[in-house]
Length: 201
Image (cartoon, rainbow, N blue to C red):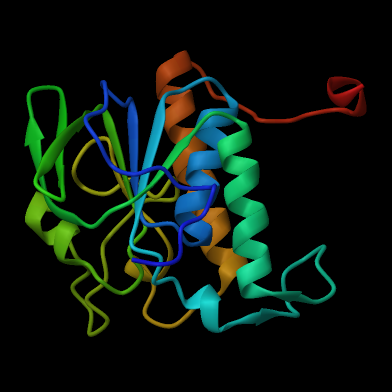
């Protein structure tokens, strides 16, 4: 467990979370940002072992120079500001159940209609759900352009789907792509998350 932060709540029994995100690096936080910003109920579980704790960002578009820990702190605050719940906890099991999924975290179960996996190179949860993997030597989770896996409403992002391109900005884009597809399904039409200056005035 990492030092207590105001950005995380202690795991407890939650009501139905429409979207559960597993992993709190750039991919998971981006998926949580886009979905919560647009009105979905979002629960993110994280063990705080993201590679960003060992990074300094000099190659993230729009950020000249930023320590990874500082970037994470700002990202968590931004995501929580849009209503997502971020919790410290390790997801130990996932399974399909009816029209959704059951996620086990520290011996408690949580239900969701959509599941976004953002666990870096750890692909065990995807395998547990029966997600297809690529047939090449890389053996990564196979996804389409929206980051959806072969299991409907399960998304894999970041290093889970790439053998080498483990960049924060690529992972964040993966999380956004997954979130936009979820929002498209929920709205029943292609969804664009495009804000204008008037939206913040």
